[in-house]
Image (cartoon, rainbow, N blue to C red):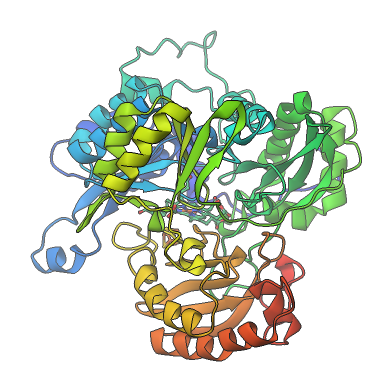
Length: 572
Ligand code: SRM
Ligand code: SF4
């Protein structure tokens, strides 16, 4: 099966490979670790495995120094991520997440950039109850993190047309069919008895194999003209092709990804490239074979070069395509024409099919809680109690109250008004087009603030925006606390990546429709310098832009920044 010409990189396997190999299909000693009463943490090896179960051990970094001084164990707590294909949750599932967040978490829910819920602050002793609560509501957390295929994204508004509904069904099917087959999750968290173990009944992972993938793997499906899921940032992206109002299939894009490491030019964000077209019923086969190519040729030695984007760049796009077709036993058709025009969300009430309505709510930074003077969590809970449609979490960390009948629209509108829930239309379009990753205090990799800081930075940028008559100009702005790119920073027309507390690298020049990466404009600057730079550029944009020209295109045309034409020249 393995091609003799294509080669995986040589080198000793990374430690994570050992952990997976010894784990007996993702079991390790997790069951015992979770019961161990002396520490609120778990071992590093178990924490690596824990990811495949949708969770990480973290500590509250706001408390880290103080606890160290007091010679106390770090304030350990778990983050838990739900697998929610296409971001769709019923009102009952919403209420379950709300209840678990308040009972076992820190009273907040994070709507993530991959359209799902994250809970933070769960103590070890409450993890099993929380996971059981999620499963009782017919959701799970399997493969929400780890070296496997993750939550499959798709355009979140299936009720906008029947096509969206069909695409959502494909996303759900892909997510389910690509799950690991091990029963480890069910045994550890759901008390399932183990049946496997003898040679005859030994479990096998027919697609992943015992070592799973060299790294995480992500799939998303876009429905043009909306590129809200940033299809080119996915390891494997599908672009729906519609003819005569019928879904005829998908263009296939491979090799996208956002992560990189500061100062290491061997790492870079990359955009996926379209290699052909497949019919809807071929979508699983294509995904499975691509995943096995990454399984066989991905870098298992150096994790920071292990994503599929590096495998594609190393082996060559044409060779990967040939290997895919060889494994499929048939050829992809030529890619069909497509056009995207934005990657953000569209807010407020929109009428969909069959007379149903959808309300897109602006959720700044994706954080749902009751803030001082803004009872967002309570308001949404009250809506969930009467809502008979569903909720759709968007890839821009917002929320659609979807599939609302005309009758229910009146009640829901009243609740929206009562709780002051906002479609963001009184804000600047820049704020409505913002995204920030979690970062501090929970993310162990954060170098600077993101979610907690971006709103106040935008308050200041808004002044420049308003002075220059740009309040209604959609300019995408994204901030991450480190270069991993969880808020897809390299696809924001203005991007910030955390470098050190209060310091960011500033990026410009990404395309508004998610089809071009940005480039670094200034390195390691603080708020004052950021505002100074924007005070120079935004007025020029206001005065010199062409009709309909987006900010990302303008800064390139005006010679302010060079265009990035491929991830491999991102750093040049
Ligand atoms: Fe991410 C790691 C949060 C979307 C690239 N990401 C992390 C961890 C788990 C930190 C860790 O490994 O210790 C963060 C947990 C923080 C916390 O306290 O909750 C984290 N990532 C998030 C979320 C919650 C950000 C958000 O504010 O919404 C997103 C959850 C998505 C989900 O529901 O599955 C999230 N992460 C992304 C995306 C965007 C996307 O997938 O569309 C990316 C860039 C796309 C990509 O994968 O290339 C992304 N996260 C990373 C990376 C870099 C991977 C790489 O290729 O180098 C890491 C670090 C790693 O894997 O080693 C990471
Ligand atoms: Fe953490 Fe970095 Fe991801 Fe932000 S981008 S959540 S700081 S890993």
